[in-house]
Length: 228
Image 1 (cartoon, one colour):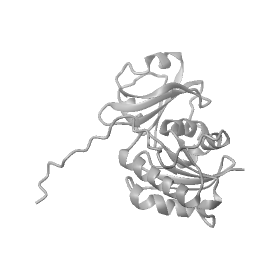
Image 2 (spheres, rainbow, N blue to C red; image 1 turned 30 degrees about the horizontal axis):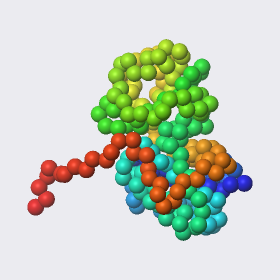
Image 3 (cartoon, rainbow, N blue to C red; image 1 turned 135 degrees about the horizontal axis):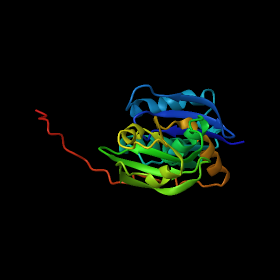
Image 4 (tube, rainbow, N blue to C red; image 1 turned 180 degrees about the horizontal axis):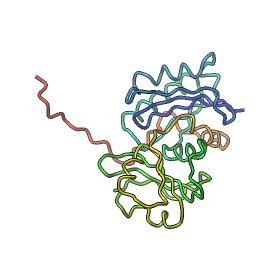
């Protein structure tokens, strides 16, 4: 039985969970946005309870795409725990987490043909992928601009669930009666099943060299406000 510490920090809310054999035994999430730097470590301590990091078989972290800062916090925390506990590192894609969240929380509409996880990427751009209602990935992750014709082919075939923090954005331009929307952030608890699969298949990351999947390069900006 694998005991896996799960860390999700890819969007505005962060969470942590502890799973045993694919089932969640402890979970905590933030209620305030963008508190990753101050709350991720306390969340880890809380979900571990009386367990030590070294009592876990692995640490699994969200690999992205998502917030540059959030992903850096999560990956840095996970790496530190793996080094300290001498345990392997796993990763789960943000969009995979959302697909399993839709399935696990019973959010699929009747006759659902596709799950489309959506991460907000500013303006009308999103990060998206396409999954089957069983969690099988059918299309690679990509960055795209959403308009009224987005996902027209999938919507013509039946019900489609758009889930993630970009779902509301999509609902404002996609008007198909086959489109269903769930505005939410990915949860660490929804990483349990794909993390368990990765552990059984020994798909471990290189702790020293693993980097988040940003999809797009980070662009630093300079504030226009006078500092003095």
